[in-house]
Length: 427
Image (cartoon, rainbow, N blue to C red; front, side):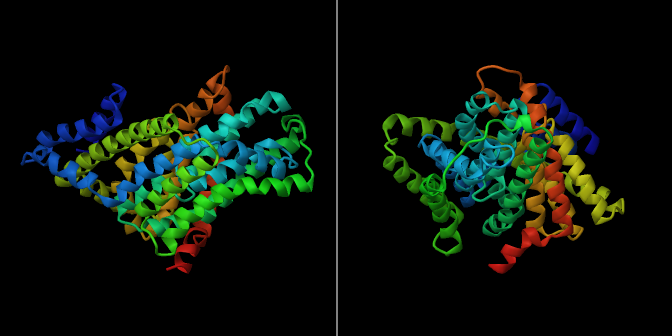
């Protein structure tokens, strides 16, 4: 049964069938093979109950928040402020890339939006200031991954829905690891540019007056972050309501910058509808597939097979890391999460892992999938922003940042409090 399911999944994906449709087809194929009852009769109920989840309403709202911020002109001012404060470090504006991605991540909740927004502003600086192109592009692709780890993260919402875990606690758990990962990214850049000074480009000079004056440009993203995340922990709003507050705040911000008009709203709504439709197709397809797998006993059989192996929790974590790294090379990240988490999470939790801690580890592994070829989404996003050049440049530049994520997972394994301290503190 397990082998048949894997083979069918590989065949459907190999035929380039859209992932959401492939997951649904897998459920339809498994039904007559292993079920005594016509499970296809439940498609309507599964689709309705899945899409009727109140928490999922936060997803299109967070997508719209990112779309509005993407078009508001926030990125240019934010990047300018970061460049004045961080360009003195070895690596110059590459640190501004990471810093700007970190700040924007705390408002958008999307890795793709983060990489696209900061990349649009930053890429012209490569030749202008003589940076190593590959490392510069890699810093943008890697920095963009922070969008799904730092709150408000769309992927953490999906993990929370799939595992019935508190999204506010997941948001708190992602803050410290997200900031540590940003620091590790900057450390990698510093080491590379100390060893190869020519990679660091021209030094930008700025007075302290210029730096402090530029801080005003960091206030809008900070305001959006406090509005969204602060309203959740103040008990004023649920994550869904906080997302709606964020959209209102972004509209006010865009209006204040003179960017709010019908064309901008049309583009933002169009982008929101496209992304939301894609996500919900995957969610519904995966929900039906997981329903069929559970009803036919495949999920319990797989869980029993793994637990009967007698693998220790430590080695099981290693297996999990390898599994996601390999799968991330061939599968889109959201599809990977929705397909695997209903199976993986119960096994890991049964072995004694905290579901909140586990969520952060899985999100970090999903981040790695965003920058590992051949289907790393952030690689394609950054490449699409260039006027010329090979995708290989972005791939090679992003590779040093993948081991950095593995280092963070090792730190989380040694010091689980990195993820659990804030959720426990605000419990």
